[in-house]
Length: 314
Image (tube, rainbow, N blue to C red):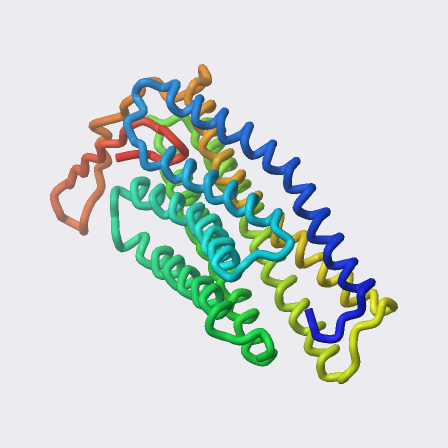
């Protein structure tokens, strides 16, 4: 917040932080129930041998839990603030890592397909970590540098949202192409595509809204600073924007964890429905195609194992 803030405005800031953190108790309780149910459903299937997904989901939950615990400190030292930001970065990046892993397996472990999402994730991680390091490097009195770091954080949020959208499109397109084959259960694959699209859309939208909130809050603060006057209690526009930023940032981490965890649980439960694939393992799927006119028929064999956690694991 800008300097020379009156006491009643500081009280409003403290109240917003406290209410957002208190409301986070309710969110964390829901998240804990979803996480426990997801781990139970995932390990209930004896044929599940891929432990990367539950490990990512567990790390995502623990980082959310740690971030939530630190939030209860009204004022905390710089190391705690750095830890808070690092946990935030991990929570924001891990859902995209999980989606990239699914794309990698779904597209036959093709590295070319995941190059762009991986580069986007690396860029977003670098931007968010730069913003975290700036807490120590940039002095709080340097408003210009702080504004630049806010723009860097906004770019990180937007790139993360774009990465999620790219991975969602890749997964949905691959599932759609599989659903055209008569050997597959069209209804099942469309249901999985719906799950991926819904989770990706909610998470991407929350990231975009959070990025916009950071940008608008920074612009509002610049207006106050350029006017060379302190914020008064009657300046409700800034207080509303700041409150919106606090509530948005506190909710986006919850959405990041729940959207990825719920996706795993929903697809695992889908695997147990009677209208699932006729066999747990689909192998020897022969797709015949002509490479060129007057060329011999080419048979490509694709070994596709069961739908385990929202991705065709190969």
